[in-house]
Length: 179
Image (cartoon, one colour):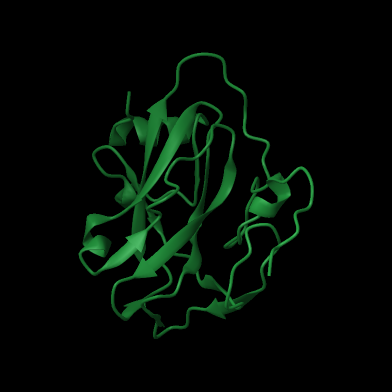
């Protein structure tokens, strides 16, 4: 079952759901709009290595916005801290943003029960696009789960700002990269 807007509001007020800051005008019929935070990360290496930490550059989105470029992956973040020990969150880009040619969170929309923090957003534009801190960029839906719950205890817990991939932490032994 998906939570309706009024149930999202009720769950936020009674503590089953954390959205902070919570703005009533961001509640939709069955989702909650999240805003783009002021910080972006980009990977700096010509080749990204899934088995190692990758260097990044940090960009602050200024008052006049920031122009995202095609062919570049940007890691943004939500202004809101979102989490629940009861509901499964799914985050998607807003259709109005998609109509501007921006892909938001297309490969990893599902969150885990027990995750609490700011969401890292994967942003990829089709053409140059100026974005602004605070713009409504995505929407989160919340689903009721059934069965025993094993709360998230992963590497991105309590995220603040955009977080680069930590896939390399999942490896059980180091690998050698072929040249």
